[in-house]
Structures are given as C-alpha cells and as structure tokens.
Amino acid sequence: MLLSVEPVRTLGDPDEPRLTFSEDDEASRERLLLVDGQPAFELTFWCGTCQILFQRRAGSTETFSPEGDDPIEAFGSLLPRGEYQPLLLEVRPRLVQPSGPGDYFAEEQVATWGLDSFWGLPVYPRTPYYRTFETAVDDEAHFYEFVVPMVPPSWNERAQVEKYAAELASGETPTLVAVSLLDVSEPAGADGPDHYTHWALTHFLLDGHHRLQAAAETDHPVRLLSLLAVERGTAGVGSVARVPELRARDPKKRP
Picture 1 (cartoon, rainbow, N blue to C red):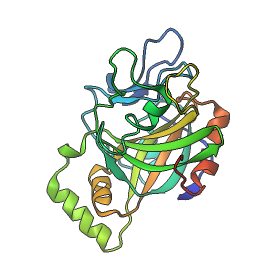
Picture 2: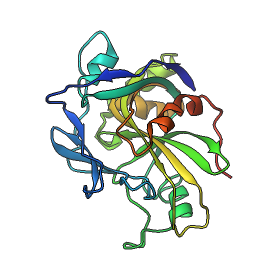
Picture 3: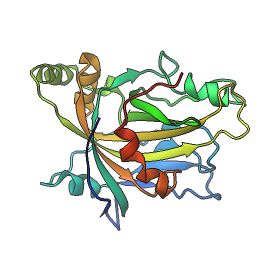
Picture 4: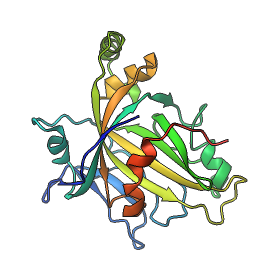
C-alpha cells in the first residue's frame, strides 16, 4: 500500500555523507553502496541488461538513528547530496534466505537469466532479505520490491524482537526508514526461458531492524519511509517517476 508521496526534495551532505554511491559509468568495474568509505553492498551493474544485484560486503556492519524533528532531513543528512523522492509505504515483510524458498535470485532471476555463466549457480546476495511487494508493470515487465537489512537478522537482539512483536500485536504500527534505488534491467541475450524486464525497488534499511524482523515473524504490517534516490539507480528519471503509481497498484505475482 502507498500511504503518501511528497515532492522530490534535495537532500544530503555535500561534503562528508556517511553513505555514498560509487560512480556508475562504463569505466567503473562495479557499482557500490559505501558506508564511511567502505563497500557495504555491490549493486546492479550499470549496463541495463545485467542481472539485478544487491550483495552484502564487509562494510555493512551498522544501523543508523540520526536525531532531528524531521525524519526526512535527519536521515537525508546521511546521504550524498542529490534528489530524493520521499515515499511512505505500508509493507508486510517476508524474510527470505538466499537459495531458500521464495528467493528472487534462485527463482525469478534464474528463470530469466539462467544460472551464472561462470559459477553455474544463482546469484548469491550474502544476506537474508525481505520481500514485500510485486506487481506487473505491463505485459513485458514486472516490478519487485525488496527490503535489505544493513545487518543480518541474526545480529538482532532476541529480547528486542519479542518486545516489538508484542507492540505490533497491541496495534502499534511503527515507521522504519530506508534509502532506496530503482534498477531496471532488460535481459537481452539472457539464457533463461522466461524473458521480461525486471524492475527492482530495493530499500536499504537504515533504521528499524528489530521491528522489521518482528513484523515478518508475526505477519504484521509496518510503515516504511523510503528516500528514493532519483538519479542513483540504473533506471531513468522517467521510470523513477512511475514508482508511486506502480506501488499504489494491487499486488500481482507473475504467472
């Protein structure tokens, strides 16, 4: 469910943001989300036909809770200067283990691109993650949404997860915060039998790790404040502008 959309805002620290994105151009060997200059996640390659990717790296070791009355400005101060689309979403998370049931990389991605040509295996994200929503874009494209924790659920304190599970059961609906990217990849020359364009909205969770795990374990919805980086994904600005409309649709799995 899409709860609200704010106008695109200029956010971010122009000098020393804690989170940055590597340059995504043809000369770059990889796209990265970095924390304090250290690679935290490898991202979908810039080419536009490559497989969707978020693969945890050694720099992904902490969560974030900046102070401030305006959460958009507070969390925006962690990010590189740029244009961001704030979205308030309702999500009902489902925790997925790599190569386990429901793993996008082992199922939908393999059906389109086939196995990795070198390893002979599905892409491995090196982290559990949450699936929250999907729908058709049109007859030739499908939209997937993921919430990726900055630290794995196994790092969460069990007592805190149980505390928030009780709060969810009492009717509370907390708001979590993420920085988000839209990647769109058309699988030209892919080996799989099911060819269609993949739209991937990936939320990198900054705050709310215990609450998100509690929501997944109890099948309760939570709110997610997404700061969608307009120009940092592989999707064009026009595709990013369609996210609110797509996210407001009814969920629909690909046949």
